[in-house]
Image (tube, rainbow, N blue to C red; front, side, top):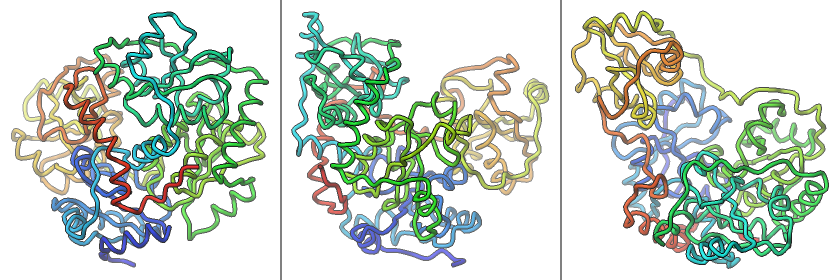
Length: 527
């Protein structure tokens, strides 16, 4: 197929109900996406399409359906995807408005399938929880209690329960015996809101650990709404575990995976799945970043297991695909796969791995298309030009990074809104583009070259190179050429959110189970 076709709401719904592979891509920036979107839509902004699409939709003949909300993004994306080698590309009839008018359910926030699943788990399994006031009383009484924070370490450092220990979700079953060696120790699992504390707590319950376990009801939001103080900058992390702890945890995790219907694959079975060109197969290593970098199976992508369950749509963007997980201990892959299987994925664990299989070192590198050719300049050349007149510097990093620090005089813009940004910029004799590494800026530079006869240059190495050279920086929203819609401000992030927003977020989470029922396509089954 060499042209972009169309698909209807009913086509997508039927494909979901038939468990066919569906790649429904929302091309808007994250903030408008978070305001309303279909349940299984994956947000890949047009701005970052070339950087993310090969990893998130790896099979080039996947049936891809694109939509926007009338901004014209889908038409642009369709042409780009055809040029990138995708052969089955369609736009959604009527875009988001068409989905709505056809009676399709719309959801707000991000990572909604995972959050809705968490609420369903609690409603079915009655996951034990304690209110913030009850946990505070235990801590004040110096009771035999341990608080385990199931979020990413950076989230934990931003704000956490005083005395809490960072144990990201997939690590809980593996690490808990060392952190709570007495079976009478009360284990509290928390996150910022509800999902990861529910899934983390239920993981420990499902694994049959001997300790009493409870989620911190409503997480750090509930803690704040109770008028209790959070800690900032804590750095307490889990440590190594003994061989006996690892063996015991592996046995527990395998039983959980078997109950959930997780499939087993050896290397030959994986090769057969990967050779099946009619299906999409993701291969994820769910250990820690340090373990992955030290040595991993070639072709595997690092995604920590807890975040994979929390943000499945962000990495496995083809609903109905097959997901294969691996680790080196038999715990983290089995526990993570147990949840994915219940979320309707065909999930498998790769068995029989030997130390020699973890032969590739280094970080995961996203697969990319051929990079555009753009004239480059170095830091010193840019510094010289900025001290003269006529140079307009554009920064395409995330708005949060820009506000945190940027090259003095840089204007912030969103690649997909380049035409609008140009209307806000001063007249230029030349443009210089940057971002953190220069990668996104390189694609933006090619776009800009097509819009203007003014010379366009790329800062080689991006803002990171400027910083490495010891050049000055500035902070704040100094020169925003477009609105900061690239990231949705989550009500559970930071410490300065209005109480009304926090309570509203909790109320929304409570209502997700009813929304799932109205939508009817989720395919979740709580074991």
